[in-house]
Each structure stands twice: as C-alpha cells, then as structure tokens.
Image (cartoon, rainbow, N blue to C red; front, side, top):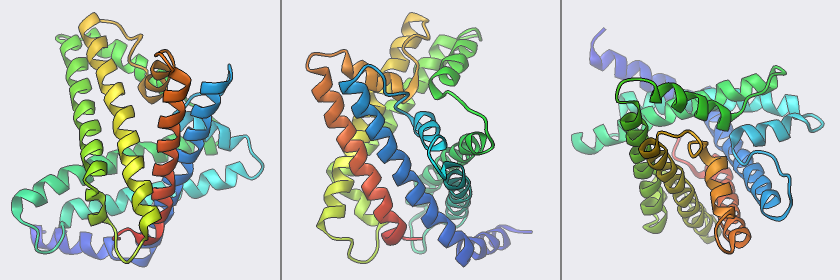
Length: 267
C-alpha cells in the first residue's frame, strides 16, 4: 500500500458520519470537562476543599453524580473518535495546504491524537469503576525520569515544550487564530469565549511548564504536579484567590468555546 492509498483510506475514515458525529461529541466532552475543572478551581479558591482542578478531578466529580457513569462512557466514545479524526487529519492534511504548513499541522494533530487517547483511557478508568490521579501520576513519572541519565535535563526540556504549547495558546487566543478552525457563523459570543479561553489555558500551561523547568533545575518533583499544581501555585500568590478565580473563569470560557466547536468546528 503506497502513500496515496494510505491517505485515501484515512480520508475515507475521517469523512465518515460516525467519526464526524463522534468528534463533535468529543468537543462537547472537552467542554464539559473544562467547565467542571473551572468549578473545582473556584471551589479551591474560596473554600478549603474542592478536589483536584484537572481532568481527573473533573472525571471523579462526574462519576459520583446520578447518571455519571453513563455520561462517562459517552465521553470515552467521543474522545476515541475525536482522537481518530485528528489522526486522519494528520495523515491527509487540508487540501491546498503548503508542505511546510502541512508538516506543522500534522505534528499538532498527532499531539492532539495522543492527548485525546490519553483522556479516553483516563475516562475509561473512571467509567469502569476505577480512579486515577493526574498530579500523582505526573509526579511519579518525573521522579522516575530524574533517576535516568540526564533526567533533570529531560524534565526541564519537557517544561520548555509545555511552555511552548502555553505560548502558542496565548498567541492563538490573542490573535484569534482559532477562527481558522471554525465554519459558519458562530457569533461574537463564541469568538470572545474562545479568545479568553485560549489565553487562560495559555497562562495555566505556561505556569505548568515553568514549574517543570524549576523542578528539573532543583531535582525536585514537588513542583511537577501538572495543572492542579499550577492553579494552586496561583492561589499562593498575592491576591491568589482573585487570580485563581479569573483563570477559572477563563477555563470556563474555553469550555463554552469547546461546546460551540461541537457545532461549528471544521470536521
């Protein structure tokens, strides 16, 4: 099978109604998770509890609600099909795209494929009655990595990569480049939500990346706790409650934008 056959098969899968509908469910699932994460972050800011302000915290919160297990299984299917759609996009690219831009888009789609398959797996754990801790898993991973040759350097490099992803979110939000991902007329409210949401996620990811760099420099896993740790770091700053609440509202805006993508995304 040559490259053209592979691209043709990938395009056929990506254009199927099942994958298209599933991808839109995946966007809605992402929106729901971000809204739950925002709610947990607000609770952390203004009360002693709140849970973990990341995907695992949101999924754990959802699993304890009436009908939560059913919703989790729907999310699993949505995340798997959204990952599959991104994989087909990586293989086929957009028609008329230049080679340089196509390579960049392919890298982004592969990264999103890995991201949503990871979310599907984590969601499956909760749907099947298990549990997980994103912060604990991240800390365990970095602890093992630091014991490898040049481990601290590798942790710092991971931090720099996350910083780059955060910077891209800031750029995509501030310049409204995300408009290229939409079709039709989503309206000003969706555009405003997308801009605020991307900037807020960019800030959060930048903090996560910075903590990884610091952790690598110190040889400590205390800082490398992912999104939950980054948001709690905000809480420790002057006016921390206000800062965390503002970022939480931004994450909620990203959730609203993701729900809009279920209808307006170019799938």
